[in-house]
Amino acid sequence: MARVARIEQHGGPEVIQWVDVDLPAPGEGEVRVKTTAVGLNFIEVYQRTGLYPLKLPSGLGGESAGVVEGVGPGVVGFEEGDRVGTFGPTLGSYATDRNLPAGELIKLPDDIDDRTAAAILLKGGTTEFLIERCAKVEKGWTVLVHAAAGGVGHLAVGWLKRIGATVIGTVGSADKAERAKRAGADHVIQYKEHDIAETVRSITGGKGVDVVLDGVGKATWEASLKSVKRRGLIVSYGNASGPVTDVNLGVLASSGSLFVTRPTMFHYYATIEDREAGFARVFEMLRSGAIKPEIGQTFALEDAADAHRALEAGKTEGATVLLP
Image 1 (cartoon, rainbow, N blue to C red):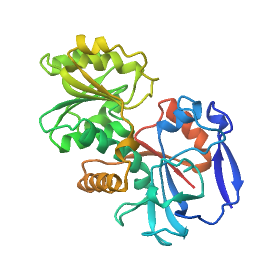
Image 2 (cartoon, rainbow, N blue to C red):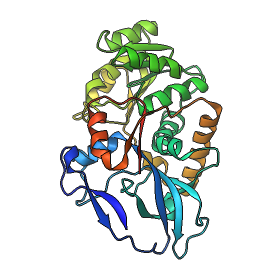
Image 3 (cartoon, rainbow, N blue to C red):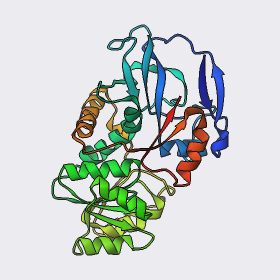
């Protein structure tokens, strides 16, 4: 028997309901995992509300850590007692136990605890592919990171500093400014008090930045356009303020022959080789101290609705972990 979150319709946090289910033995190529920690991510808000529509009914959550409790036929490389993590794409991490395709699991190193793994897998993997394989940031570049105190944002700041980039971060409050500075940001812009693009141009001597990492979306799109240098790149990877729509390609030309991409993590982590190489780099950065999960708050697993409310209201800092 497992306790599992289900949504029958899209809507507010109240649509998250908990049910008891009989969990069958793991099937061909599957592994049964007992959940020990779950990472909360803004994509789950998008899925719950219908911005990213799900086929209903559906589970929620993709990121978690756990322990293998059973192995199905045909599974190679996992055995009972192994500590494992996943970041999807199979949904349903809001659960005490579940069966997962073995191909979606990675073994967790002994020196990475469960809470850290649950807080770092999706965000750390996102940070890795955004910086190293999507934007391909090089030493000496200047990068603007929106929401620099957020889950991905503060990891991106630390990662960028480690590889030798100059980092400008945007934040919404003084306490978040301090958080971004602790992560290593060279300059921090409080967007409620200062115009982002004007400040960026001032910092960069009028040139603009090489790359913008924008997980905010609609609210920062214009600022991103005005902040990037000629032939620079905007990586729009999230929609925290709503999606960017009706992009006028002519604006990219008039703004300096800009490049724009809207990547998704699973196109960069499509194979086992991608996953192994990507997370080897994530764990390397974690061990070096370049990135830290900085778990700001935890909630009981079945209080996931409250965690969603806090996340949407901007009342969380850093990573949020749900604990069974």
